[in-house]
Amino acid sequence: MLDRNFEKADKIFFHDKILAATILKLIPTRVLPNHITILRFMATPMVIFLMISEKYYIGLWAFLLTAFTDAIDGSLARTRNQITDWGKIYDPLADKILIGSMVFVIVLRYIDFWTAIIIISIEIIFIIAACIRKRSGREVHANIWGKIKMMLQVAGVAILLLAVVFDWANLLPLASKTLYLAIAFAIVSLLTHGA
Image (tube, rainbow, N blue to C red; front, side):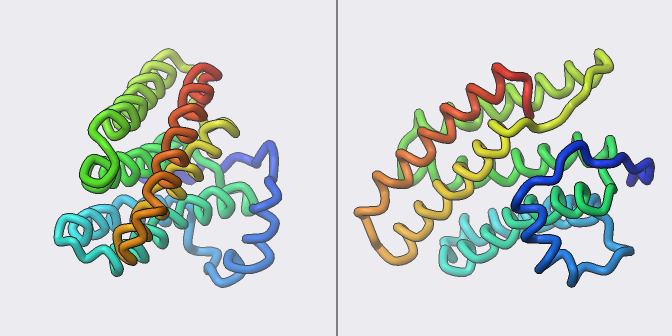
């Protein structure tokens, strides 16, 4: 299941260097980036359960930690030259499941129906496009626009959760605008063939 045919990274990003100098030092070499991706798949149902149960304070922290594993597995893969075909497909899929679930449970409830539907629809289109590219033998990977989209989605959901947890209604417009910006970057990413 876990691909051990590692590739060398084409590019190391600034945040990769920061994580490599700090958090990645704490991760044993036997832990592969794909293990972190699997952890995100396994943690997502727990996060969703917390949201459905309206345990938003704990859910906020669980969401942030789970979302942070995206930065960890990507930086781990690039800095340790452990990029795999499996990771290129399932890392973005794990992100889409986490974000899509959060949008369905939280954005739908606290922002509006159409924002949630647009975000979920775009994520489904990304999955379909990635499957088509993979079947046709083309490279499947995230581009910089997709990475920005993911950061904005995480920020938008986190701001929304802060508004709910601390009853800060004045944060709701900021959460909405952040998610609208994420939609814009998602469209750019889709048009430039990213994941």
